[in-house]
Length: 374
Image (cartoon, rainbow, N blue to C red; front, side, top):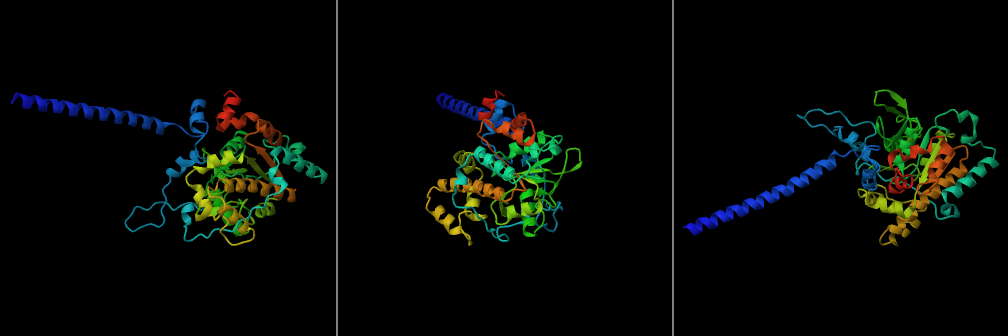
């Protein structure tokens, strides 16, 4: 009898120890998760040590997650449910895979322009403008007293994961209204797409932003203006997108921050499955669409099993297309810099007049932090 009681008591004690250990472990995990979710990931919200750890993997839109998550939309409403406010004019819930057909796009075959560095291309571009007696804004007196020495609007054509947030924050630091991904009526890319298809100015209807004080201000700079869909739209890729910019803003500014293609791909590849949307689902960037030049890109896509080389060529062809467009539309101002160039901030200050230190506002990454000891 005593042996039975002793054995039962030992079993109870052993179970209590196991339960206590599991509870302790779960408590540690909960504490860690709580601390993680309380971290402020917004631009400027991380101290440098945290910036090094987190901002290398964070997607360009992470600072806008809170804005989106606080909105409640419905499509459509159901009887008996609490009515929620309708989605904004340019919200992506207005589109579905069934209602949106991928738009025709184009990229050029390789030329010598593709393989120039940004410095080399800008030197030739500036020389061409001078040859045609077209003044450079950063050398004109009328812009010297302006906060930014570039004509407006300034439209950034960088692909995602190519410093779109960094550049948007750069111009905000310079004192003008700059928007990334969203404006007051939601997605910039949807607004630009609808205007393009309707032959309207690209920023019509998405050219204002409400400040934290509730003041409506005109938007002067936009970055991260594409989306993978549905709907899928990039002004620099889809047919007529760049032409629509030049038509309505012939004296505006287009900008491009380039990045080492391999580093871009490594950053881009794991970002939310976007390559699947680009490749087949919403965009048809695999060359599977009908149209001139698509056979070349589809053959290239199908011949690369891993697809890595395809997307490297795709990225570099995108840079080439924008450069060739800038050379043919000299009334526009074009500015290009390389993210990995040690002189990037210096070059930006030359072209824009915005101080170099503004490039650091968004913690571009560990390389920049180490280099500037910040």
